[in-house]
Length: 371
Image (cartoon, rainbow, N blue to C red):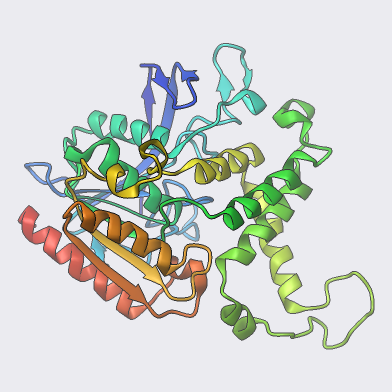
């Protein structure tokens, strides 16, 4: 059983865009116990639609289980009997941290469309302030999958001295043109929804749910491999026969609509826009003339980099780009390419080889910490 907390910050945060957020709050949870020399802290960075609720459950809703509960907890690969684990809802989120649906203290109204664009660098800067507030000078590890892994990489660049290990799972050093295109289609579905109102739909008592549903469908298609879709759904009919209409006929249609409806009820459209932009903007090599190796020149951490063979959104080739850049800088790198049928979502699922690998890597970290 876990409890969410809220950390408030009054020191202005200057964002990469040049915008400034004068005060903000970050929702977070912790699991396990910080040891006496504060050397066993692990930061978990979340992907697109996740939150600070990484593991465990809430007393008021035991069915609300953390999104990475199969990975983190007592006796699990990230063992909370040995590590003090922190999950944070990123700035701009919609699960308790300051974001577009929060009240802007300068206007007394929701930020809405005026909330600034956020980058991975901004998230890492805010996370570093939370670490300071919690009295953690250096993380034993920073870990994430997908967009969370990008944050883990950025930690090694922005604060190389403040972490000893980085776990980079199902990641890419930047988005391909195809990936940016998928994100743009999703954003346009939201922005062109008549209920969007320039991002100020809170004041109109509406939600751009139609656009958010389409955005979620587009995204969800990219998270699964073709083989996984074929295995789960194939061409199965929902009611056993064709109706020659535009109603839901195939099981895959029913699945996508269900996921989209559920997502549109709990997620904020403005947050979705900003998170997908943060994905698009992430590119450590950009400020180094496109040279990824130079981007990691100051990196001090050891790395575990993991990819999955059927992940076509962040393919193993993209992970190997990261590995090469790290090896160019003589970083300590362990790389694993896991054969898994699930596509990009594999980093969230149960795979014995994947979990054994993470367990073994954290055994090494635990030995360093003396836990």
